[in-house]
Structure formats: structure tokens, C-alpha cells
Amino acid sequence: MTTDFKMPSEEELKAKLTPEEYEVLRNKGTEIPYTGDFLTKTPDGVFACKVCGQPLFESTAKFDSMTGWPSFDQAIPGAVEEVTDTSHGMNRIETRCSRCKSHLGHVFDDGPTETGKRYCINSVCLDLDTNTVPPPRAPKPPLDTEETVGTIEEIPKT
Ligand SMILES: [Zn+2]
Image 1 (tube, rainbow, N blue to C red):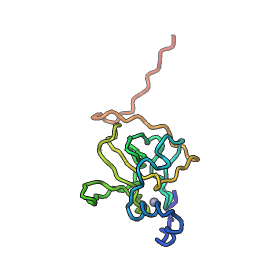
Image 2: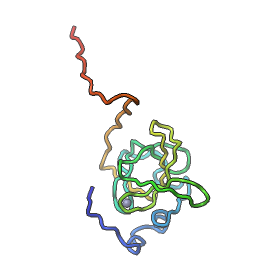
Image 3: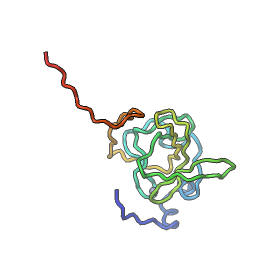
Image 4: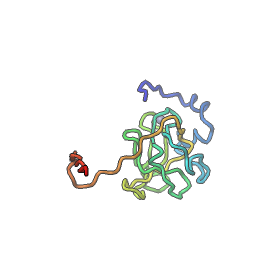
């Protein structure tokens, strides 16, 4: 991940992005449900911000929420900012790329997995990098227990 990212001007972004991408990423638009590229099963990889390339979500976090937008149950730590959004008469949490502040979608607390989160993300905000394959997901550590590094018991040889 590079840290020397220079934010393009809005004019440069208009030239780089399609009108729909620009509308969603920079004007907090929403793509039409069930139209996105990443709705169905995708190859393993890392989903990155279409504006600045920052990795945002790993394919291991993706699930089918049946909402019409690709959904993830967790973001790459530090990659996504959450901002209160009271537009359209709703009280929602907007998600933005933490580097370029582009709009990505919203996050809800009704996720079906152990994270309880449902990141509802517009496909047009994402690029899938299949050259970077995320590691298998670590099992969630048990709650209410100190983190203990147990010794592995040797299996007696018979
Ligand atoms: Zn970005």
C-alpha cells in the first residue's frame, strides 16, 4: 500500500470514471440494485477503491445478502471510515474509503456472521484485484477468554 497517494482533482476523476461511477463515488449516489459486477460469486481477491486503489475488502468477507448489492461482513482494518448519514430521512452509517474519502455504500448491524456487520457496497466503487489472494480467514477467537497461547499437546505415539 502506498502512502504517497495524491488525490486527483474532481475534473481528473470525471475523466477517469464513468458518469455512474462518479455519481456514486463522489456524489454519494447508489447504483441500481442487481446491476453490479460483483453481485454474484467472484474470484478470490481483494476489492480496492476505484478512485485511489486502497484495498478495502477481502473476498473472504463477501457474502450474498440478497439485497442487490455486494455485501461484506468486515472491512480491511483502517480502510473504511464510517460516518453518520441522515440523508433521505434515514439514519444510516455511510462508509467511505479512509484514504480518498470516496463514498462506498453503507454499513448495517444486521450481518449474518459473527461480525454482525453488513457492509452494503456499490460494485461501481470497487476494483477486484485477483493477483492478491487474501489469506484464509482466521477463526474468531472465543469471547470472554484471555488470549492464551496454549501448548500443543503431543499426541502420544503408539
Ligand atoms: Zn479511495
